[in-house]
Length: 163
Image (cartoon, rainbow, N blue to C red; front, side):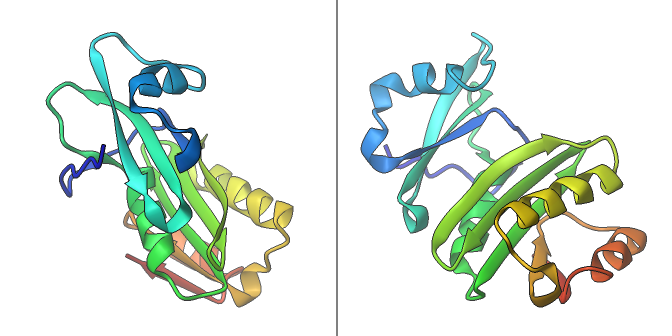
């Protein structure tokens, strides 16, 4: 099952993260269809996320070897050493977000956000839910930020870094 894929990024929110013990390769499509619309013209692939004991199931065009942005964010969160691990990407109106506390994954999700202010709203909503203080946290972005977006985040976070 280890899907190696390529380093190219697939910006898709049609993913499902499942604990390793519940993943069955033969049921991958059925598992994904429970949470996302999957077109019959797409293949369902999976990639292990060992740092969080999970498998990321996702839809992609047939023949593609790209890995979803959420996989890249999970991998980045696994490499960080901070207590609060906040890794995000904002692309074409979707916020992709992974939040972990030490090695405990708290959230891996995507949110429709028509503008960056809405993306910030979701980011702060998640941090509040998990009682994480942005003033002592660094937020990491895997997509480029405009100067205005970066400065907006600096008003709340200890630091803003691009991966």
